[in-house]
Image (cartoon, rainbow, N blue to C red; front, side):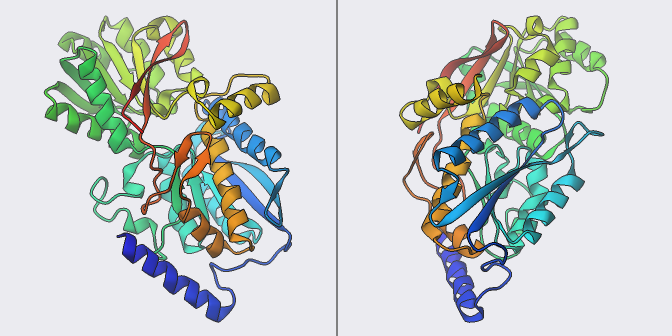
Length: 405
């Protein structure tokens, strides 16, 4: 796989050398200006989380003095959510990707927050040789064969090259570690739920598969309607089965908080595990802090900001000083995306999407806020550390490290 990708790169660059510039070559526009854009849900309950991601990006750009190599760097914060949905919207994400492709100054696209949104934009950006770096997409099918649909990940690479990169571990790791954590905490049985979306169902399936392998009894498996007003009937059924744990594959925006509220009201006395898509203060607010306290646990890729060391600890200090608030857990991933983008633009040294994309792909032993890491041949970060959180005193509290570097 690695050899084939490099071969494709060589062919593409050779073609560009002959033609001077092509669809993936140097864009027109201001020759001294390059632009980084982000596409994240800035409307709805995810706005608090994505606001800190945007702050992280802005902080990285400020530290760089708004420059990368010979270029001035402009940044634009784009919303991929709609007021009607209160969440990411496929039509808006598609429009954002098209807008980026058509803007000759855009050379890096940071996003998305939701894997369903990334499914829309990756192939559009790929066809234009535009690098995409995600701070939050964890669906494994974007980069790995055999962990999603049969046509994945090739369907996202119409150019034959890789353009999607991410600085978070993928769900095949998170699902496995989640099941193992449940067992470590004394669980013997679990009821698995999901929100029927790409990310939520995908990670629920991975959790369920590994739960069976390690001897956890799966008492049920269902998808929920994330637009439902309540889940009282389902909660009563689960309470009657009395599993030790409920696993919910979904996000804050797919109504996980309401599910917890209804489970507690129905008399469920076990614990609930959710993935990183729920690690937002908005999730606790929607569940009710009293319902979630000590009950709701979560897995998350990487470490919380206050546990970072080295450059990560410096990021945490600067963030609080600059914005006067605690960063949410994904803030550092926005910061890291921007750092990687700036470094790739600097190393490419020319305003050429294909050259910048190649520089991103060749990111190796990068010393960032997350530690030292590389992008592997699939575009995934090489770090594998994850965290376990629990709701304590009304907020998300770090409990332990899951996995390893």
